[in-house]
Image 1 (tube, rainbow, N blue to C red):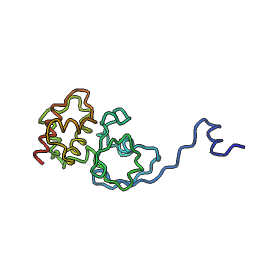
Image 2: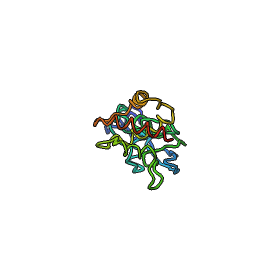
Image 3: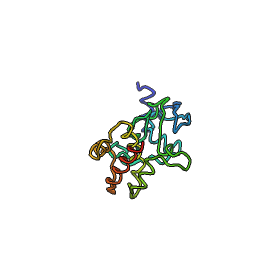
Image 4: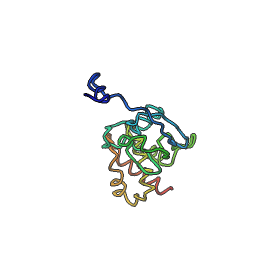
Amino acid sequence: MVSSSVAGVLTDGAADPPAAVPVQLTINGQPRRLNLDPRTSLLDALREHLELTGTKKGCNQGACGACTVLVDGRRINSCLTLAVMHEGARITTIEGLADGETLHPLQAAFIEHDAFQCGYCTPGQIMSGIACIAEGHTGSPDEIRAWMSGNICRCGAYPGIVAAVAQAAQAG
């Protein structure tokens, strides 16, 4: 005799998807309630359910840093964590940094130092840079490079990125 859960797999080739679960998150200062498949990554919840597409899907394996966001002030690769794991958390994305038309100091420094070319990695670089500054890892260009090493820029804008993070750290 085959159990009903196994029978579902045997008859149509795939298991039934898990039921959606409610998740309460505070995204960029706004409370948001979602009903998500419990397998939904935080990245996919942001991009596909909340239409916050500033956070980029690069490698989807945690190797490039394009999906970096802040969760309760700590930087994480949002592709590597499930949204349901962050019930009640405060999440900040690139969309939550500017104050109206006034850019965050690190955003302004990125422009001043030409710290981007194609721009794809820029949101993750900025979010990681904000955390780097908050963590106190900006004592030298080498220290900034080491603590930003989880964020890849395929265009090679690293000198500008390091200069922008150093400038924002000194200003703040």
